[in-house]
Amino acid sequence: MERLEGCKGCTDSVKVSPEKLERLIAIAMKGREAVSDQEYNDRMDTCLSCPALQYGTTCRYCGCLVAVRARLQDSGCPFPLASRWS
Image (cartoon, rainbow, N blue to C red; front, side):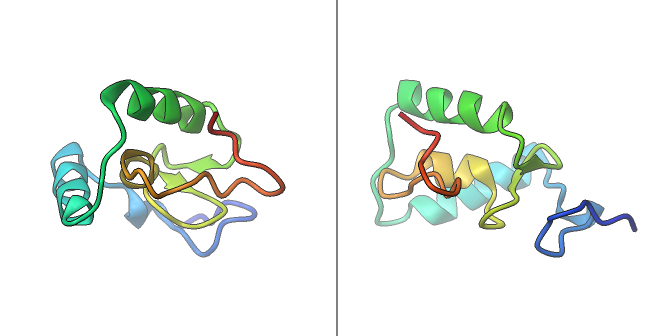
């Protein structure tokens, strides 16, 4: 398995199906507030264009699944020095 430079140990095994991703979001949401759909879409657009996105799902800086992190009100962008989310 090929490792991408700068990754925190990720491999191709970190790819997640859309169904599993939805289940993970639902689990993460228990007892937490979500952002609006517009805010979520804005955050995802930013993440999908970020140079730190790996495998289309995973943040290189924190190892999170960006779709989960972007949905949670109390989450922030872990990009070094400053958040890329507005």
